[in-house]
Image 1 (cartoon, rainbow, N blue to C red):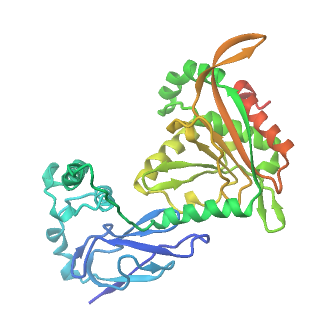
Image 2: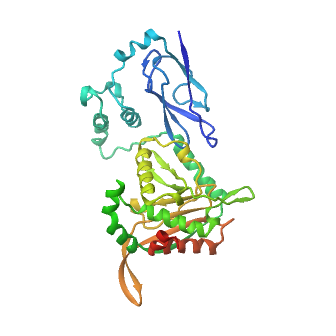
Length: 377
C-alpha cells in the first residue's frame, strides 16, 4: 500500500484558516489525478483541492464544515498501482469541476442527475433544470404562507462583514463628491472601439479609462495611494488597483498590479478575466491580497450615488456611478450632457479635505480631457 497525504494549500499570510465546504468523494471512492476532492473556503475565495495522484480515498481526516490550517493534512489517498489501473473504468468523466461546483452551490445532488450532454455528461442546464423542479412546490405555495429560512454566512460573507465594520470603526471616513462630463470619453471610445477590438481582441470598455484616470490622480497626490500602519504612514511607490466585483458569491476585490505600466488593452483583459473567474470562485488568494487603492463601480447595477467604504488598510476608494443625461450649464447655456457622479471616500486621519477634493478634481480632468492621460500631461 502506497499512501499520500492530501494537504490544505499554502494560504497567504493574511489568511489564518479555512473551512472545508464539501467533500466530493467518500472513503473508498476512486479518484483521478487532478479531480477535485473538496472545496476549501477562505475569507477571500473558494478553492478547489485536486488530487495530486490517482488512487482510492483511504481516509478523511477533516470533514465537511471543519476549520483547517495552511498545509494541514486532511485526507489520505492509496495510490496502489493495481488500484490505479482500475480507476479509468470506475470514474466516468460525467461532470466537469465547474458544473459540480454549480450543483453544490444550488444544493443539487449531481449523483442523481441524468446527463443530457455528449456521452452522458451532466451539463449546466441539467443542474439548473433539477433546481427548478425542486423549487417548483415553493412557487405554488399559498400566498398566505410565511416561510423563513436560516442559513449560516459563508466565510467570505463573514469576512466582508468584518472588514466593513473594521473600516468604519478604525478609520475616520469622509466622502467628497464631484460630477464629470463623460462625453469626451464616450466620443473617444466610439471613435476607436472597433479598431481597438480588432487589434487587441478585447472590447474597449469604460473601466480602463477610470483606472487610468485614478492612476493619473494618484501620481499627483501620493498620500491617497498610501496606507496606515499603526502610527506610520506607508507611501507606496507602485499602483496596485483593487477592482470591486460583485457576484452571487459575494464581493471580491481582485488587484490589478502595476496599473500605471499597463496598456488600456492589458487592463481590459484583466478585468474581463477577473469578472469571469469571480463568478466561479476561481480567483486566487494572491490576486485578492494587497492593493493600494480601490475602485467600486455601482453604476453597472444602476446606482446613482453612494458613499463607498474604504478597503483597509488602504486610505481611499473611488466610487463610480451610472452615467445619465442631465441638463448642465456651459457658457451660460443649458445643455444636455452624459454626467456621472464620482465619490471618493478617504481616511481623514492622513488625508486632508483639500487633498481629497483636489484628487477627485484630477480624476474629473483626466476624464473630461483624456488627452492628458494619453500624453502624460
